[in-house]
Length: 235
Image (cartoon, rainbow, N blue to C red; front, side, top):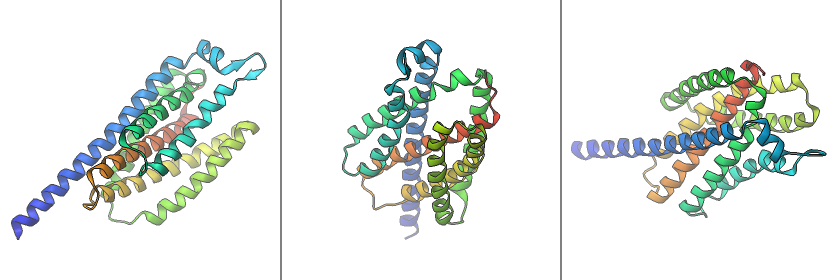
């Protein structure tokens, strides 16, 4: 009996380790795709050619800005019905669109601020991820509350696109830092529970590792943008 328990525990740890290896592989791949595209497209020539028209902002700009929202919801809500290959294609498309959307930060903020804020974000994200994985406290209610606040600041952010209020943008950014760090801990705890679910098939586990990577990527990017709004120096 002891040998069986030891073998089962070892199997669970190996499965959990492989699950999180895949989760972080997806997350880092998305960051690499988005970062590369953002850097290449983050110049005035590209912005002028593709995102501006003689009368103002081009429709393509709004497609790039809002299409990732719909694509991200599609991936997370329909992953059971979609094949892993289709999910991979959508995941790459999402990362590429996010890269185009993020390219505008290179027109607004100085490169040293972007780099330093990225490392601050990485540190904060790693700390909250470890906390979420190791804590014994159930974060379900906490996560649900933060998710409602996230919806609120998302709507406020859309409104502020048209209001163009610097003060509102700053307040949203400050709240966003707390929301996205808290959600990082919550999602890490959720992913830990998923990784230890022995009832999942290999296909479902593969799909959920992609979803997990997507969720962590979204949290990282939003935390980065919130901190950049607070800490970044404009060109």
